Image (cartoon, rainbow, N blue to C red; front, side, top):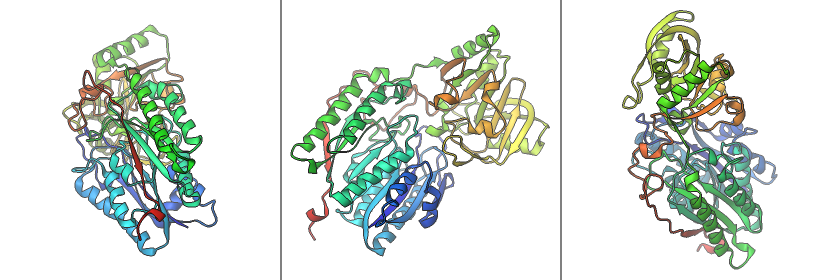
Amino acid sequence: MKILVCEYKQEVSSFNPVPSSTDDFSFHEGAEFLALHRGANREVGGALAVFEAQPDIEVVGGFSAQAVTSGGVLGAESFAAIAERFLGAVESAVRAGGLSGIYFSLHGAMSAEGEGDPEGLLLERTRALVGEALPIVVSLDLHGVFTDRMARHSDAVVTYHTYPHVDFRSTGERAARVLLKILREGAKPVMAKVAIPALVRGDELITESGLLGGLIRRARALETGPAGLSAGMFIGNPFTDVEALQSYALVVLDERAGEGVAERAKSEALALATDFWQVRQRLQQPLTPLPEAARATVEHHRSGQGGTVILTDAADATSSGASGDSNAIVAELDRAGFQGRVLAPIVDREAVSAAFAAGVGASVDTTVGGRLDPDRFTPLPFRGRVRLLSDGSFLSETARQRWEAGPTAVLEGEHATLVVTSRPVSLYDRSLFLAHGQDPTTFDAVVVKSPHCEPRFYSAWGALLLNVDAPGSTSANLPYLGHSRCPRPLFPLDDQVPFEPRATLFRRPRRDEVPA
């Protein structure tokens, strides 16, 4: 059997004014694509481990487009160019003949200029190329916006079960096993999907400890139980403002298990969705106003208690699609008279250029931040010393993937030490800091531009943890953002949001059900 594997992944914030382009992706094809992922802690790596353990399976390396990090909406020309290469790989595999099935590693929270459902479009066009009967299994991030178009053109969908995400590889393994069940055993997936008019953000989404975890454990039990193929919860990406943005419950069962399986899939998905809706108020992040957070940081430092204040700035989370050039917390700490040492990341290509021109050890007088998202941030005057310069290429602490921040400078001022990058890079671990000689535990305060990191990175040792209500294009203060495309009314953007749960079924015809 020949199985085609392709990948196309990006998460965007519609509120980031800086559009994404092809420059924000890495591309790989064929054998190079497979070699890159073989053994890696990613979805494709997990799928390859399953497929390549089968002696009668030939894996066809298709096309991979992997965003370097999240960002703004992808430009129309860039999406068209990447989609052409993606679909070209599918067409080549079809022309070569003998294709038995397809596995796609996608995200679900992409958005392109003029196209709010890029993944659905790719699946629709793939289906037109391969025909109605060829099985297609897709893996998605649980932050995906799971559209009807995605469901109509795939046989089964598998989603992450953890947040923060630590199950990339096992998600690929699960997707591969579902595809093999279809190919080897004749499994007949039926997908039940329930839309929930809610957007959520907060600590209760941490699956190991929060309320969402209980729902996902129920989904796991369904997936591994009788007739189970896949189940999960999509909480969407609140910052990808598109027509289908909301949360979803998904249950995929095997209709071979007997009469009534489809109805059971519907009832189980409805139960998950209803229980999610009942706790929606608790699935929100309490936030500390920016001035109050600065005062608390100052008071903690003056008290002499010691330890580090962790200031979570999820509003400028580059891994969620923000621009990364917020200086709001650093500026507010300065206004509040903070006399300790604060460590913060920031994106500012011009400030980096000034640092490179000055050289290591030299003084630099520049501004930082506020260039990419000027409606929210104002360039902050900064005077200090160039502590370190680098090419910004380093391995991430979590997946040990190479991340590219572009030319990077560490600027050391009287109270603020800034790791300034030329381009956004993911910040859901400490790797940017550590790769540039900055140990967060040695600072009095650290700005963390990620909504959630694994506890060991910050929260396990921080003396005071503050989730700050700062400006930014990925703010957990969702009504602040100004959604205009998503369905309304929608919690928490509106009051009195009705919920009338309905389950929609999706099933694909099998080979013997399609007319010759």
